[in-house]
Image (cartoon, rainbow, N blue to C red; front, side, top):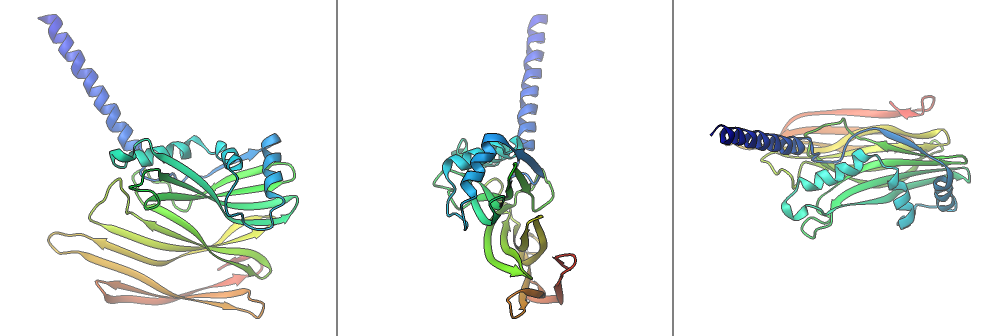
Length: 291
């Protein structure tokens, strides 16, 4: 009798530990890709291979060679590799084991044979037809190739968050010159529409970012929200939708250099205007950024 009681207690303890471990694993599993800073140096044969591939390019390639993509992703931190698997595993049963990644070049600035700056986009998605290109998450990665080594750097666009579910899509909007500096603007589309955890509240946001590409480095010089829609569900008071929208005017000189960006914004709640305003950013030549 005593032995049976001990056996039952042991079984209960083991079951509790198993459930606890499973719950902990679920809680720490990311619902999207990490938002962590990471930088690593690439030297030797791998650096030489990257240099030989990107140095002759005069423009942004449509697709990266498979071997080059594999080389670059080998240097990705385990946090990002595991993060993709965990994100997809939080989707429905059909998505388990289908986590896939792809790397693409968003913009390439080839200063000379001893300096190439490559802005990459890392995408995590599910290989199933059900999700395919409907749901995925993306992060910016900067690859800098000089004469001696290559530097790989992740560029998070938000603060780290363990329970956030927003998915981000990144696209190139425009190439430009800002007072002789090669620059680009990119668009980030962020939404909480995620197969992991559909809820009653809906959030969508569009962010525009400007980057400059100079010999001394790549810099984000401006970032602002262009529009945002948030719908909150309430069974008693009813749904409420808040919309933030903007009208953007870019002032350029005769040489097509951006001098000033003016943003006229309006806030509406259930289609009723609540607030509006005006803000602007001017290019500071000395600081080489918008202020």
